Length: 135
Length: 135
Length: 135
Image (cartoon, rainbow over all chains, first blue to last red; front, side):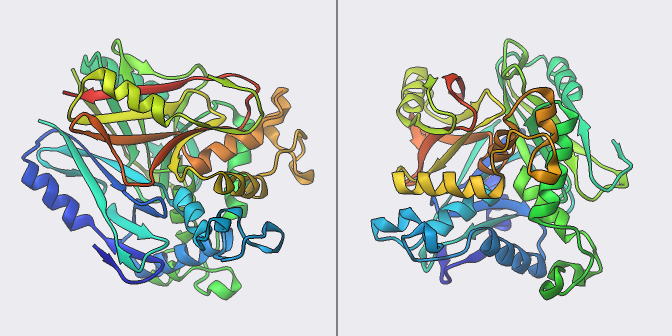
């Protein structure tokens, strides 16, 4: 998928539903994970205000800073020439993956559970892995 | 299960053990997840002091605030009429789910691993999903 | 494995690859989890600067403190005689487990995904569980 912004939440719920339907699996589990180490897959509310709250909160917990000196808010990781050390931290808060039950051929979720991809260092094409097991 | 308090840790370890025993599965995995997006399932110590430490720490990282203005500690999510934006954040720290191995028909855990449900916006009935795969 | 330092990141990627190869499973999932409640298994960059950044960041979010009085930075959990309450918190940020797809007999990962064990209260031998399902 295309992720045009640096930080961006992408709704992948319908894509995961389609994968499960196409698999024909009736009882099992589906693993959904980011294939990038600056991104998360998470399940929470499909509500734009909350998504903005997340973004502000994560930026408070671990601010973007392209610098390389921790004493002034930078990160050692950025000595590699990257500027995305904050993204590697934010992904740990929000998590790499979700595992969801499949029951009667469908995602078995609570009423408000919705699956999202959260990129913290985008502006290019990104990939999600959907792996289904069961029968 | 009934969760009478707003924030509350509920011991679900025995319930998960029972589900695994009743399934008859000898080798596989069990997924245990909250069905609510203001709650977590986590594995850690069965020790009340630690649970109080968690509660105080989470409240520091992302305080309860019914307000809607981020400039004064509120959350945009609360503009929906909710007051539980903090709960949606706390659940991301503690995690949605755990996946545990089943070996020889039993939960395959370390000696101190104990399974809990952690509600951040309770005072009503709540549900956990236990999904078992294997043979 | 031997974990000589209190906090230490151990590269277990090759060990997990070997377990998958030896299992002969071609399509499935592998669960990799810490068996200790003061440790994490996580997937991120194999880059030493980032690992130092993580360590400093986690220590800021939840500092080591052997004390038992929360008013002076201690933890109630340490009233049990332990001094590792911070470790039980750090593990929640970094996560207990990862679940990785197995496709064509191999770990199905993004190009930079690398599997690590992160101990927050070491200086003794520690164990990781690798559970594989599939066919």
